[in-house]
Length: 270
Length: 262
Image 1 (cartoon, chains in turn yellow, brown):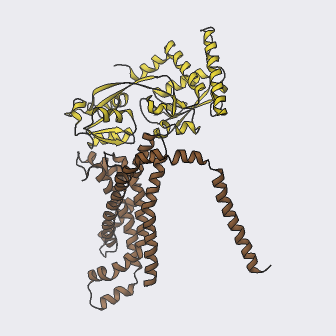
Image 2 (tube, helix red, strand yellow; image 1 turned 120 degrees about the vertical axis):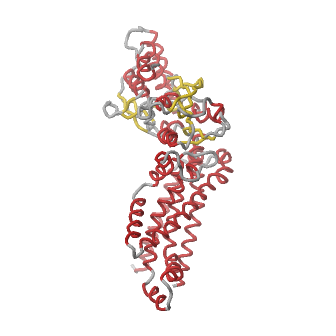
């Protein structure tokens, strides 16, 4: 208990510090003070867990200094810059990340893995402000008779285990035959092989398949769905100091246009 | 010191070391955390009926299908491998070396997703799961074929010669004299194969899992997410042991009996 209180106190003072800093000059370098306030698992380094690959959010890139690329990667590296710490990205599984296991056991400071902020996850994780509005979408072969979610009854719909896409399918297409996959790679393969009729998952990933240069014009996104959900970065439940600093950096990025330019790199409407 | 006293002292020290290790383990562990994380009664109650009626049942069914199919395939392959005709031997050897050398996971993906892709949507029977079980049959058949061949060759030559001298045909000798003895020899290694297959069924989920098709590992990892608790993993682990322990005990019994019979 005392440990928790101490952490709270640290968190509170750092929040106050931030608030005071924000009251000061707005032009000055008012980032987040020293990185030692942030409860990082190794001082001076922001260790980020991400389930790679999940393009365009996270993907391998041998030529990049971190070894990774993608929307999440670009955003967290800007955050690391703002916090004046180095960035290390660790490829990990999504399940232990979203259940909080990797964060509570101090395998990493922050989860950045296209993770939707949900009440269920909030029980075990501390989320940052949303950094991306998530939309769900339905991908089908171009010659499919499926035109909307209403046509899914009795059809085999691929979903990723434990994702918003799975929940959305359960709620809005209860008569569809849900087929669970561990990752998007085998699920897309299954759609190509015809063992499933459609994929319901996050829009950017389905857009990637629609624009797959190896399969031009073979698959199309027929519907998108607003879920009023956002992606957030996650930290261990007690690490308020870090999340406050991340939120501050995010707000700054949105204010000075850095966020928009990263966003346009990946999701610009063509 | 007498030799027996010495031995008693040494045994006593070993017992003390063992008890000390167990006690340290018990004292060092954080029992409230263990109970809270791994033995959460509420979570157990929530998953309990389905754990047995769906997950454990599917695991047993997939294992049984894969084992029976694999054993049948293995018999054919073993006989081919012992055939006096070269092409049969070559075919069996090529098959065994190929499938023994591949991870089951890759074979499952190729059978379940690769075959429909390569043959324009024509899939193996039983849907994706059926194809995955057939993949396990293909792999376990290769392993068991080698076991069976070794078993058949372990039957003393004199048995075959004696049968021939009684005027029995080659086929009849194999079926009524050699194989029954070979099976007795290979029962322990075959049980090993069942246990391995039982665990390999956890790979099936890569082909895509429909409603009601989940096996133990997949069911458990789903429920870890749903309940945000690792308890389902422990429940699944217990289920696996409930299935394997009687099996291995049964084999130990059969082995003892066949030792006596010889």
